[in-house]
Length: 339
Image (cartoon, rainbow, N blue to C red; front, top):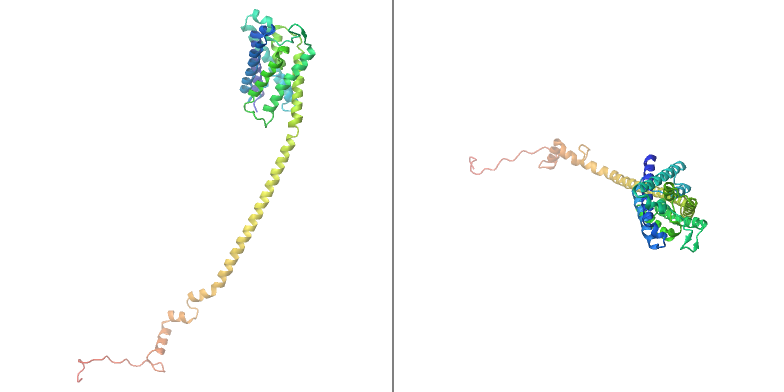
C-alpha cells in the first residue's frame, strides 16, 4: 500500500489541476454560455471530462484518483477506505482546489475572471429570462448528475470484476462530460464540492454554495448504496462458496489420488508375489543341474577321475572281473624276423 503522504500529494495535485482546467474553461466560455449560447457548453464538458480522465489515469495507482470529496465519502460509505484516510483525502482535495483557483487568479487578468466568479459553478435561476429554476431543483439535479459519476466509479474502479479497471479513467471522464452536457446549463454541472469550493473561496462568491455540498454528497451516497446492495453485498458470500467448492473438489481429488495410488501399489505387490512364487518353484531343478558335488551321476562323471576310470574299465574291453587285458602287440609285416 502506498504511504498516506504519497496519496495525499496525489489527491492535492490531481484536484488542483482539475479545478484549473474545469474552472479555466468556464472563465473562457462562461460568458457565452450565460448569454444563451448553449454550444459553449460543449468545450466546458469536454475539458472537464477529458481532464479528469487523464488525472485518474495518472494517480489511480497511487491514491485511487478520487479528486472529489463526494467520491471519497461514497467509497467510505461502502467500506473501501478508512474514516481517517477519507478525512485526510477530503482536506487534501479542498486544499488542492483552492490552489488551482489561486493559480487561475494569478495567471488570468482579474477583469476577465471577475464576471464569471473565477469559474465558480452557479445556479442559473432564470433560464432564458423566463424560467424560474429553484435551488431545490438544483440540489436534485446535482444529486442525479453525481449519481452518474459515482456509479461509474464503482462499476469500473471499485468493483474487482469491472471491465475497464485498468482504463477506468476513460469511462469516468465520459460520464463527467455527458453529465455536464445534460445539466451544466442549469447548475454548472459541478458534481464535486471541491470544484465549487476553490473558485468560491478565491472569488468570494458563496451564493447557493450549499447546493454543491448537499447535492453531490447525497447523489454519491445513493450511487454507492445502490451499487453495493445490488452487486457487491453478496459478492463475499459467493467468493466463500467458490472457495469452499474448490476446497471440496481439491479434497476429493486428493482422496481419489490416494485411492488410486493404494490400488496401484496393491497390484504391484501382487505381481511381485507371483513372480517370487514362480521363481521359488523353479529353484530345485535348476540348482541340481548346476551345483557341483550334489551326488548325481553326471556330476561324479565330470569331477571324479577315478570314478571315470573305473567305469571305463568296467565297460571297456575287460572281462567280467574288471581286470584289464594285456594290450595286443602291434602288427608288423616286414620288420619281425622269421616272418
